[in-house]
Image (cartoon, rainbow, N blue to C red):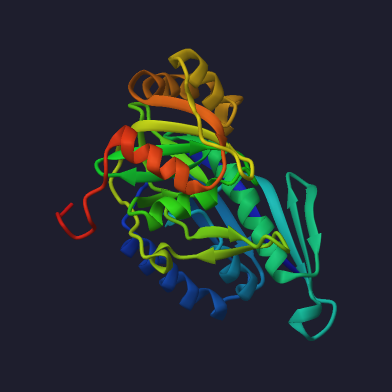
Length: 310
């Protein structure tokens, strides 16, 4: 039997390293872990610190590659256990292994498919970080940079936000996120630099797509939010958005804010900053091209990539 335990320790300072540092850290851990048995790490991700322990190096290594972007190893110790993953070999072959994940003693996942297990593990840990971060407010949203400003696209899963983000990147926008908008108390949005998760229209399974495959670039610096676009995809619809008042915009964004129940004061403070500075619109859209054309008219055209240094 192999066990991986995640235990919540504390919430503390912001961590937002460069992508280069993230890759270096991940590679170093990935080389060390497979030679260990019964090993663990204390992890910090976006101000949330938790521990991971496992007696199977391969499982731990694979789980580390599915942690939120920007995670780093810390020297924190202790804390109460809040989730565990059990890896039980039923035969000598990995393809017939059973995976189990528990949180606070309650089983959350039991499956035989390694890919499915890792995807669900990643989702649960990401939500744990989003709910417990006090340095950032996490909103379900896609985010792109449009020049020196940001466009935020709130929406839950299956709302079409990843498709919209991908099309905006192809149109020249800078990629920030297709899943979470990380917003600070000043109303600025930060990158959540994981690959886009493109959903297969037939199987509904997700596949990672690095932004470079779309011919795009990932943003690194925080941006002020200029535009909030709340849209729902409906085939053959015409994009005729209506502008929202700051109060209504705040409520619409609050509905997509993950930490609203646990830290409502942080969420409302950040949302008021966004609603007070950004234009917020809502509508039903058809193809992304309509929205992109409208954004160009509303915010202004983008300079060609490479025409200026950032």
